Image 1 (cartoon, rainbow, N blue to C red):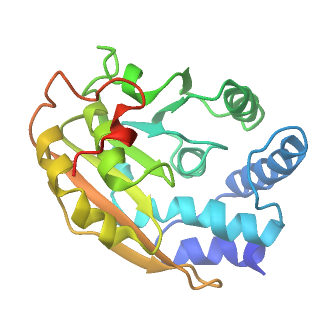
Image 2 (cartoon, rainbow, N blue to C red; image 1 turned 90 degrees about the horizontal axis):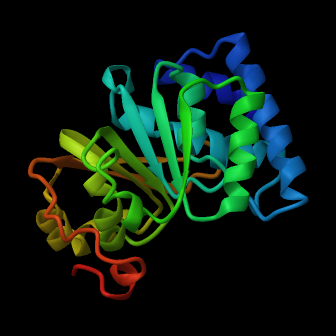
Image 3 (cartoon, rainbow, N blue to C red; image 1 turned 90 degrees about the vertical axis):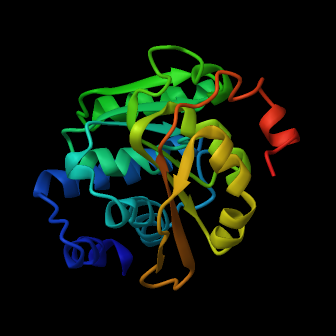
Length: 238
C-alpha cells in the first residue's frame, strides 16, 4: 500500500521524514479530499494513489536537484499544491511562491498552508505571462518548477523568465518528456536557457514513466518574453 511505503521510498533516496512531516502529509490528504468535494482539485482521491501519484511524484524533483542549497522556489500553475507544497514540507527552509490563475485554488492553498503550519509560502493570483514581468519576481528565483501544466515549448517561456542566472528550471513530465524536450530547443535558447541532463524514473507501484527536464539559466531573458497572456500557447516557440 502506497501510503505505508511512502516513507521508505523516500528513505531509499536519502529523504528521512519526521513524525511531524508524516502528520502534515496525512492532513494534506484529508484536506485535499474534503475540499475536492466543493471544487475540482484532483481526479485522484484514493489515499494510496494520492500518496504515490501526487505526493511521491512531486518529491521526485528532490532526486533530480539538490534543494538543500536552494533558497527560493517559484511554482507555476501549482493546482492543488503540486509539486511545491510536498517539497516545502520536506524542506521547511525554502521560501516558496506559488503562481496560479484560478482564485478558488488559491483559497484552498492559503488555507492548506495555514493548517499545515507552513511558513514563508506566498500565493500570487495571476497568469505567469503577467507575473514574470513584475520586477520583484523576474529573474529572482533559484528554481522555477512546474508539473503537468503545458507542453515544454510553452512552459519554457512561462517559467524560465522567473529564474536568476545560474538558477534552474525543472519541468516534471510524463512519458512524452523527451519528445517535448526535443521540440523546445528553440524556446530554451531564446529565453536564455541551456539544457542539463534529464532525470528519468518510474513510479514504484504504477510503473509509469516520469521525466524531470532540467534547464540552466545562462543568459537574461529578453524583455519581450513571456509574450501577452495566451500567446505562448497559441504560438509556441518551435
